[in-house]
Length: 183
Image (cartoon, rainbow, N blue to C red):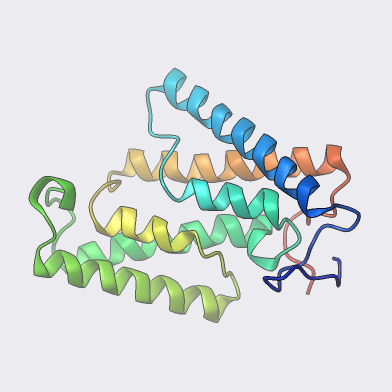
C-alpha cells in the first residue's frame, strides 16, 4: 500500500497523476457497470442497483483504501443487506410494500434508521468498513430489494464487481489486495 495520500486522505496509486486516476476510474467504472448491465439484461435480474455506483467508484478511484478491499466490499454489503432484513423483521415489514409504493411511514423510517445504525456499528466493530454498504442497507430496509432471489442477485453482483476490479487491477499492475486490506 502506498503511503502517499491524496487531498482527501485516501491512499493514491503510486505513479498515477490525478488525470490518469480520473481516466482509469472513468474507463473501468464505465466498463464494469456496463458488464453488470449486460448481465442484468441477459439474466432479467437487478444486477445494477444504486450502491454499486459508489462501490465501483471506490474500487477504481482508491483501490488501495481499506474500504475498497475485496473483504470489506463483499462483507460490508453482506452486513448492510442482513441489517436491512433484520430491521424489516423487527418492524414487521418483511412482506410490506416498498416505500416507493406507499411512501415512508413512521415504521419504515424506524426500519431505515435502525438498519443504517446497525450496519454502521457492525462494520466498525468487525473492521469491515465499506461506506457504499450504507446505501445497500437502505435499499433493503426501504423494501426495494427484499426477496431471497433479489438478495442473492445483490450478493452475486457485488462479488462480480469485485472480481472485475481484481482482474483489472492485476492487469494494470495496481497494488490491489487479494482479500483483506493491508493493515
